[in-house]
Length: 365
Image (cartoon, rainbow, N blue to C red; front, side, top):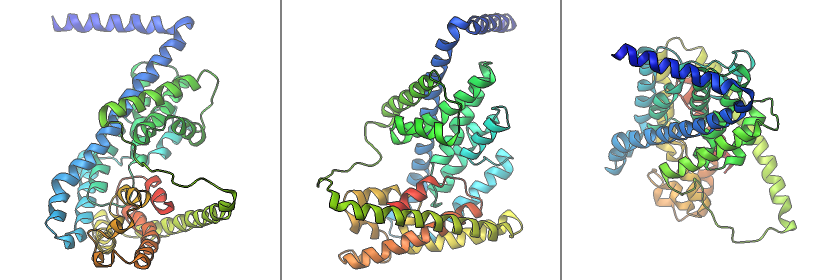
C-alpha cells in the first residue's frame, strides 16, 4: 500500500514538472517559486533571530540579572567552544561564509549549495552571537537563504538560470525579512551577487522580497529594527557635517579591514582549534567585560543611540557610575568603536560563525 502511494506521488510530480516546463506557464511557475522561497527564507530568518534570543534568555539573562557581570568574561569562550564542537562532531563541515558561498555557487558552482548549509549557520551562529560573539546574523541569514533557494530549485528540477535567480531571491528575502526593507534587499541581491538581471527577473526578486517582509511581520510583528523620529529639518548648512561623517566612515571601513586581516593572519598561525578557542575566548571575554556594548550584534546599543538614551551604553558595565558625564560617555564610545574591529576579528579568528555587516553598521552608528 505504501509503495503504491509513493508511485502515485512520483507520477503526479512528474506530470507537474512536465506541465510547468511549457513556455506559457514557466514564468508563472517561477513567480510562484519565488514567493515560496520568500516564505521559507522569512521563516529561516525568524528561527535564526529566535535562536539567539533563546540562547540569551536561558543561558545569559539569568547570569546578568544576578549582577554577576564578571561572568561576561566567560560567556564568549563558552559560545565559541560550543560552536566548534558542533562543527567538528555534529555538522562535520564548516557552515560557510554566507555571501561568499552564494557568489561562488553562482560563478563556479553551477548554483549548487550543500543542503547542510540550510541549517548549519542557524545552529552555530545562534551560539556564537547568543553567548557574546561580536558579529552579526545577516551573513548567516544570507548564506542560509541562498542554500534554501538553491536546494529548493534543485528539488523542483528547474534549469540553471532559474536556480541562480532563486538563490538571489533567497538572499534578498533574508535581508528583507530581517530589516523589513524589500527594495534595499533587492538592490543588495543585484549588486553583491552580480545577477544577470532582466526585466522579468526583477519580478520574482520583488515578490520574494516583499513576501518575506510580509511573512516576517506575521512572525515577529510590525516593529522595525530601528525606529527614530526626525526633530529638525535638513538644511544646506549641515552639509559639511555629513561630508565629514562620510570621510570618517570611510576611514573606519579601512581600519576595520586592516584589523580584520591582521588578526585573521595571527590566528591562522595558531595550530589546533582548541588553542584558538581558548585564546580568542579569553581576549574576547576581556573586551566584552570592559565594554559590554561589544556583546553580540550590538543593535541594542544602536537603538539607545538612535533613541537619544546615550547613558544606557554604560548599563551593565564597570563604569555605570559615570552615566551622567557626557564627556566620559563620548570617550567610552570612541573606545568601543576602536575595539569593535578587534572583537569581531577575534570572534572569527577563534572559530565563531556570524557576519560582518552588523559590526560595520555598529561602528558607523
